[in-house]
Length: 28
Image 1 (tube, helix red, strand yellow):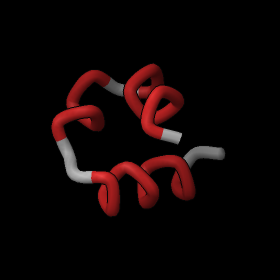
Image 2: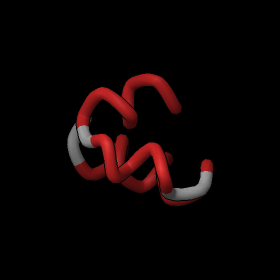
Image 3: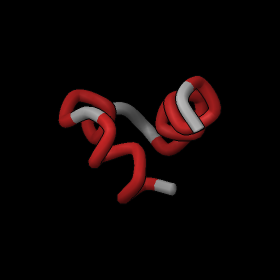
């Protein structure tokens, strides 16, 4: 999930794992 979130947005990678999960959930 982390890698996926990082790919969706560079800023996302800065966020914590919890935040990363939210990002992935936002745009599956």
